[in-house]
Structure formats: C-alpha cells, structure tokens
Length: 328
Ligand code: NAI
Image 1 (cartoon, rainbow, N blue to C red):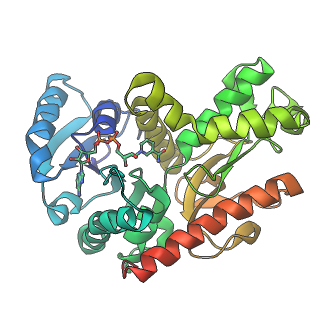
Image 2 (image 1 turned 90 degrees about the horizontal axis):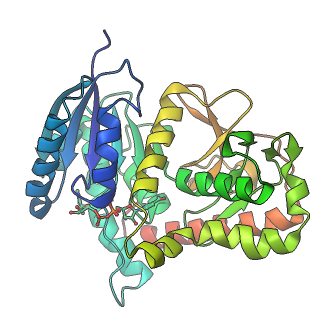
C-alpha cells in the first residue's frame, strides 16, 4: 500500500483539534487508501490534554492511523511533515489592540515557519486556521524562505461553505446543486462572499443577486459575521464546522477540485484581479492535486469590485503592521 503521510496539527488539544483529528485519522481528509501518522503540537500546558486525545485516537482503532506523537517543540513536530495544519493561535484578549494581536501571533507563526523551513518534507502543504489566519500564514511563509510560497495557505473554506449553505437556503435548493461561489479577501468581517458567478441548480447566481437588499443586507453580512453569531448561540466558537472546512480544504488540495466547480482559499497573491502581490488573500481557486490556481477571467462588477478591493486593502494594512513589527 501507500506509505504514510505525516500530518502535523498544532493546537491539537483545542476545540478544533478535537473535532479535526478523528476525521483525519479516519481517512476523510486524505482518502481511504492513505495511511496517516499524526504529530500533535501543543504548548506545555496543553500536552497532557493532547495525550488524552491521542489515547482516544488509539481507542478508535482506525486502520489508517499508523502512529501518534505529541510534542511541545515545533522543530520536532514539523520534522518530515507532509501536511501541516496550523490551528493553535493566540486569541484576542480583552483590550488587546490589533498590533498586540499580530505581535502575539508573530511569536507563534514566525518560529513555526522557521521550523517548517528547517525540517518539513519537500512536498509540505501548510494550512493556517488560527486567526488572524491570512496574516499568520503570511508570517509563516515569510519565515520559510526555502519553501515555495505556494505551499502556504490560509483557511477561507469555512466562509465558502457558509456561503454555499446560505445560497442554497435562499434558493430553496440542495447545497449539492450550488457551485462556484467565491470568497475574496481576508477571513475577517471585510471578506466578500460573491454569488455573481455561482450556478444555483442551473440558474445564474446573478439572478439571486438582483435582490440587492438580500445580497448586501443579508447574504454578505450573514456569511461575514457567522462566526460571531455562532459564538452568541452556542456560547462557544464554531469548532466542528471549522474542522470540517480544514478537512475539505486539504482534501481538495491533495485530491483536486471537482470538474466544473471551484472553491476558495487564502493563497499567496500573484496580483490577480488587481489584488496587491504578496499578501495571503482568498480567491476562487481550483487544484489539480498539486497546486492551487486562481480562477481567471471572471468579470467583476462595481458592487463586487468595491468590496474585494476593501478586503484586499485590509490585508495589505495587516502586512504593513507585521512588517513594522519585524515579523516578515
Ligand atoms: P482553542 O483555544 O480551543 O484551542 C487552541 C489551542 O492551541 C489550545 O489548546 C492552545 O493550547 C494551543 N496553542 C496555543 N499556542 C500554541 C502554539 N504556539 N503551539 C501549539 N499549540 C498552541 O481554539 P479553537 O477553537 O480550537 O480555535 C483555534 C483557532 O482557529 C483560533 O485562532 C480561532 O480563531 C481559529 N478559527 C479559524 C477559523 C477560520 O475559518 N479560519 C474558524 C474558526 C476558528
């Protein structure tokens, strides 16, 4: 059979980690024919809980899971990693300014980028989930000079999936019949979920968007603020849906996006659609199983243009802030 793929998961003892690890080990992320080795990285206070999760993973007797190790040292955890899921991050505390948040996360993602540079496998694929995901991915990528920038990505798949669900509900169709929604920009409240190019059970998404009140007062803010709505409702953040999105992202990266559809991912901007180059920005993308490519040639109308540009500009601002802090 195939040789095992080494998957490193940071923040393994957290909420997303708990929802994610079992799905990876069961084969849902990399396919039912691919054995997996798990490297779990935690801070020292999280190691005991991660070891508890490792015990439960043992107890699932997953046929594809060939081994689990728990680390509190990034160099050891990323050694030989083929897939790296960077979930652990520093949340925004009370009274914390954006610069403080970026700096605290720089203290995590800079050394993790260096560790990936030092020891990850040549084919490593990195997904940053921990917020602020796009800029954390930029920090990690910038501190891994020997790894191609195309190997680093930030997660906007949860936003993408939320957009699919909202469109399906609005149109009264199954999510399986909705294709080609797009998330542009930052995984933040400024993100722009785009339905104009969607296929909604054979009808153009632009038809739904003709109702501008629905588009701008319901759809866009519902998707962009869904994380906060879930915290309000559950009293806890969206962990299972975030884990599901991480599984989807890596699945489609490794196994390819379906013909006739695309997804959304934060990738190193090559300047497509007028975005600044060298930010980690979400675009509509396809994967051939190796690399993500931006879907080219979409016509961007004025409604979309203004919002895409604003979210891209926010990312450029975050880049300037981490540059000023010496993190990139
Ligand atoms: P959590 O607080 O339950 O778990 C985070 C874990 O990371 C903790 O166990 C902590 O000990 C660990 N950790 C902290 N620093 C670490 C380091 N340097 N190395 C290794 N582990 C470290 O948080 P949860 O709910 O699992 O969320 C994790 C992150 O994902 C948060 O930043 C959250 O904002 C983000 N998120 C991103 C989404 C997206 O769509 N991109 C969606 C939902 C959450």
